[in-house]
Amino acid sequence: MINSSTKKYYEAFVETSDPNNCGEGTMFVFQMLKIVHQGQKKLIEDLTKKIELLNKIEITLNKIIYKEELEKPILYMLCQSWLFETTLLNSEILEELKIKRFKANIAI
Image 1 (tube, rainbow, N blue to C red):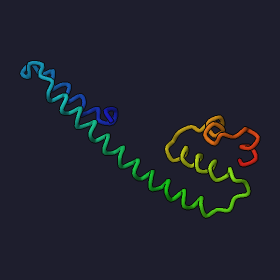
Image 2: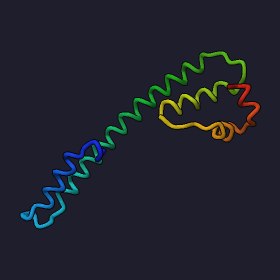
Image 3: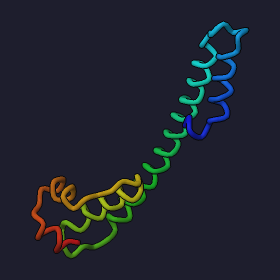
Image 4: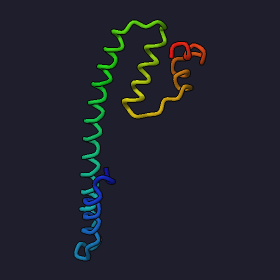
């Protein structure tokens, strides 16, 4: 959030450095807290939207008829990985579902 609010960051820094403020850092801390607060609000909004979408994904996955019992949990994990923009390794799938690579390959 600070990276996207560099103008406010530098303005707070300049204000704190002003000789008339005698090095008083209250305004700098206040500005940083405002930036962090905005970042937290944005994060909560983003996560709320993603959780809603994940719930829709789960409903959709429940409507599908699968050939293999592991297809659904693997698809769900892949959807989570895509939605939350993370990398999902095969080893993580195997570990989470407590299965061997052969079973995972069949389901995939």
